[in-house]
Image (cartoon, rainbow, N blue to C red; front, side, top):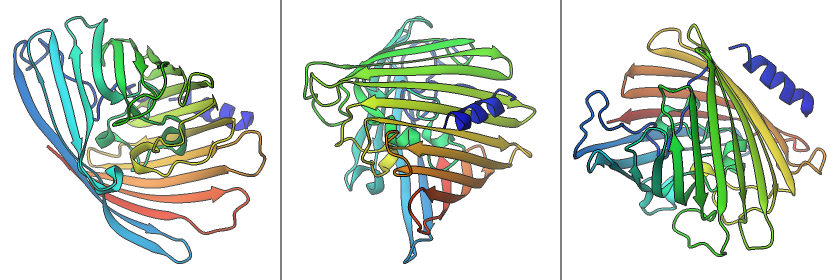
Length: 347
């Protein structure tokens, strides 16, 4: 396993992709006084739809049409010091049938390096989790992102600083650790942080950390993450390694509706993803990932997946994604590859 990690990050250090910090699902929020952004009150409505077709080559075969996401939001500014952001998730395939409040937070952002957000938002952990959902290069996030960074959204208080124009960025959060729509069941909170630094014009590196008590005041959880992102002549590469140990919340959903797995005392995973912008419309992509849900057990709970895909951009707001997922689970002799096709329109 150490050899795989070394290979992944050796490849990554040869190329970049801009590091992102997004409390919600829309990427960076406008800053007061920026180009075209008023310093006083303003309101913007936004949203996106992601209808999707899935074909799973199991025995028997399965296929279905669904909505990956269907989100409506509003964001705006009260004055030069305070902004707000709220998003509804209406897809029954994520929320279980009912629309619910996904993100809702207020941000004090008068100063670039000491901004504060309070409410419900994404955990500031990991590059892929904090990539806007409508800007993901593959249809699904990596298995390790969905299984370990869970719950991906929670309630709490976050301090953050920097922007897409600065070399250094950071985010520190104090969160319940139980997820959305659930009261905390203990008196301790999760401490979560992420930082990134742009070493060169073509390369960024970063790391994440989480420490908390997901179920009670007695058993803790510790998580570490490392990331690198590169961009060279339209060739983009990014990757992450995440290690996790201790207790975890079995009631927490996996990322974006994925089925949570039973985890061992120690678990880890990684991915590397490469894409190339042939032109403004066409972008082929390749992604390799692995996830080990129990590091103490050999050949059980270990899985790998390769994703071959292509993204076609009709315009800035309309995108078609096609992904073929080749899945390998150690110890299982089953056919479970999948073909995913998703059309996205945002406004």
